[in-house]
Image (spheres, rainbow, N blue to C red):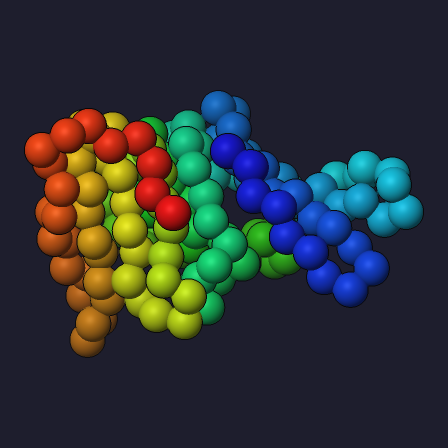
Length: 134
């Protein structure tokens, strides 16, 4: 899984892989270098990630059904949600909100919303197989 971000003078790429690590790569002046690495392997293979969440540098979805919030710069991992028996295939979030859109490996679409300290999972699509969400 790969997400690209840009800030003044630097382009960064955040990757997640089968080894369970998230890595932040930077391109200062055309030279690729690894800036940070966060070990998420306890939660399984990383299938997808997004950088649009207001409270975290990245949101990660794993093959084991975990959704994690990462700060990347201080290696903090926050377990946000665990959907047992399904993997998270694709993830995105509405900017500036606590609503996540996910596609499970069962090809079903879900909206996850966070309110009063609890996550609510609403299945919104199951008729046709889904592969990704944007």
